[in-house]
Length: 275
Image (tube, rainbow, N blue to C red; front, side, top):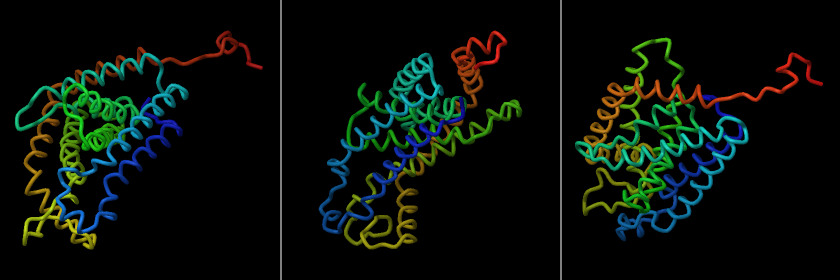
């Protein structure tokens, strides 16, 4: 199930391309006058609804493609729904320093069930959480994309069961890395819209900057505004995986073994050569 079919791969790739474009297009279209107008509070207010609709359509398409290709069956779709609901509830539970346990399940499910499942779990649980009261705003599709990528990239880790206890330690390290990357990506959705204070250009983007200076200013902005929060998220992810990862992975793999089936033609099953 960790394998991803070509149709799923195309859908997830197309969705990710839309996400990357949505994050980066202001760097190429925002004018100095628009930035100086103080648009940070209204960043992506006009385009976010369209991006959200496109992402939801891609998610539904991925579920249908999974069903059509046999990568998922109706029982696994039900498991996905249950896990999305559980993850949405986990997000509502406040943690220290603003930490949220919303990445715990996408990381483990992406690792156990594959990139498509992890992407869907990450993206849809953020949507459900927002509708349950977490807050719907122009930031939502960007949170969904980034959480989806957390689940998607967790499938890049090879099967580590042969390593014994080291498997869980490596997953905890991966969870910490993704906790940092999530914050670094999420800042980008509003950073180009922030109007720099008078005379302060050290950590704010402005039109016409080269790639190197843009990255240098963003690094300063990240350290000044996001680093400590992301360290808390990284530590929380690692701690949760260390404490509960083995038990949850055992349950996920039990579900996988129980709900996965192969269709065997009757003539083949009876020992006859199919015509």
